[in-house]
Structure formats: C-alpha cells, structure tokens
Length: 193
Image (cartoon, rainbow, N blue to C red; front, top):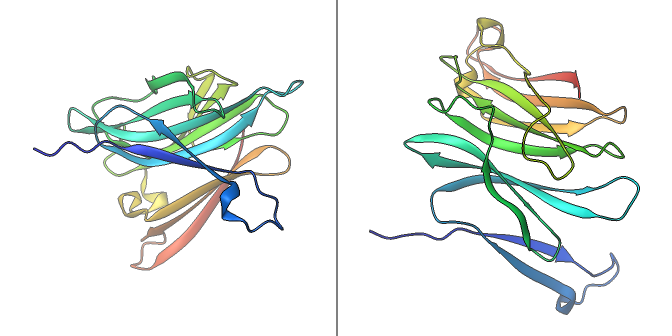
C-alpha cells in the first residue's frame, strides 16, 4: 500500500510588485501528519494592538470513513503552534467538508465555514467563530437550513465566503434545483459575525 505524505506549501513573497526576480521567492513547507487531507484553506490573522501574526489552516480529513474538519495554527516561520485540532462542534458520524477560513480586520477573530451533512439528508453550511490563536469556537451557527427552500444542497458545486466592509459574513454558492427546476443558480446570504 502506498502512503502519501501531504505537504502544504505556503509561498511567501518577499518581492515587491515591481520586482520580477524569482530569486526573491521564499518557499517553506508545513509538514502535517499522514492521512487523506483535502481542501486546505489558510488565512493570515494579525492580533490587534501588536504585530503578532499567525496563520490558520483548516482542512478536511477522513477519519473512520467520515470527513471531519481540522485546524492547524502556525507562525510565519512555519513553526506549528497548535497542530491538527479537530473542530469540536462537528457531529462526527456525518461528513463535514470543504472548510474556508475568513478573518476580520481589527477584531481578533476568525471564522471557519464548511458544508455539513449533520442531521441533514443533503448539505448545509455551518460557521464557527474563534478568538485569535484559539481552536475552541466561541459560537457555531447554521448559515443555511436543511430544507427544500435551498434545493438540492448535495449538488452544491462551489461556494465562497468573504467579509464585508462592516464585518459581516458574505456567503455565496452555486447549486442545482433551488427554484424547483433543473437549472443551476447562484445564491447568497449575508450574516452577522
């Protein structure tokens, strides 16, 4: 059996926008544990009031045939502060997939959004809010519900999440049959953080 080691590559550009010299490209590697790691999402978060900076990496990993969301926090020099912490708010018997990390300016928090089959025959979006440097969420909420209003959420092809200028969560997704037809449509919602 072939064991595949997953290495997350973070490219830190030390060059200015005008500098095209590739020798300024600084490649570093973050070695994570073996296993099936998918859909990495990483964001830089700087603590308000000082220059302390961390990176938050969220990813899905298969555990006992179910995908779960994990978090690793590391510094710019790639030293790991908190390694492979399983998100505690998940229902562990259902798939939790495709996490994305967003950060809020001057708020010392970050949010992880993911798709979940928890108590749902299809999929729904869930968000968890964390303090700077922490892996236990302050709060968790469902961004969409598990009902026919959202169509066939199991067919959600793509989604993205961003922060609005007034620090709200902007969620947008692409799905089939949201209007009880066979078309693919784009939907969005804006939530308080």
